[in-house]
Image 1 (cartoon, rainbow, N blue to C red):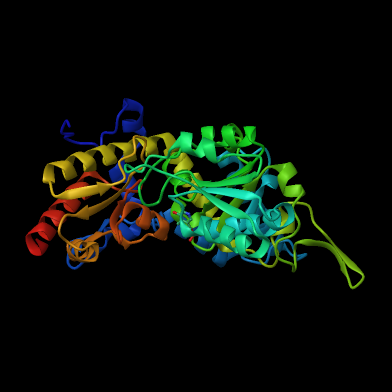
Image 2 (image 1 turned 45 degrees about the vertical axis):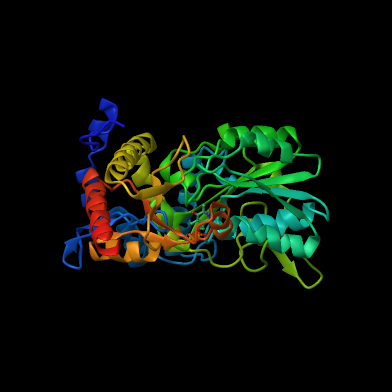
Length: 422
Ligand SMILES: *Cc1c(COP(=O)(O)O)cnc(C)c1O
């Protein structure tokens, strides 16, 4: 493998001009911090990303100047806050190229987005013997909601396999499709292996078999742009805190005809048209699925995050991260003794690894003392750990603010781990 000298000058001269990582880093106050006396190297964005100043400011401005409940009050602040809140729904629609803001349901997380689909669409349209296909790489959030329906309704879960490299096996997936398949629920990018699943082809095949498709976009949307109409998915879920926005807010995109056929999720304020003891009527989507006071300031913050990443350009972010991935791979290879778990051809900038002869928890602890934050464990994907025959991995996940210097620090810390642990 060729040594890459500096990747901060990402491939393509346009992205070089548009994407100045040192300037980007200055937008993230938390990155200035030292831990254990060393400057922080944050390689855990896959668990939750840090927030740029514009997001922090947007949340603060909301609370300081126009915060109020939405869709309710007859007063000035309530109208202003409702306008700001609903404007974000339109921003989200634009960001994922949804046909309308009415395709965008605000949830608390992608976990809730998936549970919403299971509990409304699933309970209405699935019956005993129907099949839901997931993959071996799913996060627990895209396994357990379907298992709850397995217990409740008697649906069957089929699992699309991967190979040793973490490559999604399209042919094996094809063979699982049948007239019994009602839904394919699949991640766009593995949060453990970084594998980019060929979701467009998965969606095409699933539709040809008469099934709907839900994409878990928690990791996908942060590493590359998303166009739900081009994908033609029926549902797409993502979570705000991994997209440089606040926690406590998520999104469920759904096709209009699918959403309007779905019964309400939770009952309460804001989702009704008229309530009486002789019967209650519900609003049209998306409000039908949004009972109670929503995460107002978090939605405002997510709007700021979307404007921020859009301003940088998702293509520029993707190119920058791909440069980091290539550089990190080559440096890890040169170091030796480190096994990268997940070597799919198309990968996002997520590297799971094991240091031969050392427990992953010990490795992560040594990295931490060197100021390098990673995640260790099963990454909410225990079935994947079983499939790969490992107890867990150390995961370095890169975000738009990481640099080649961060990779160098990771390699130096791994060198230290080898000295101390082997
Ligand atoms: C993080 C993650 C989730 C869960 O996200 P929450 O914000 O906890 O709901 C689901 N799927 C994938 C692929 C993830 O990476």
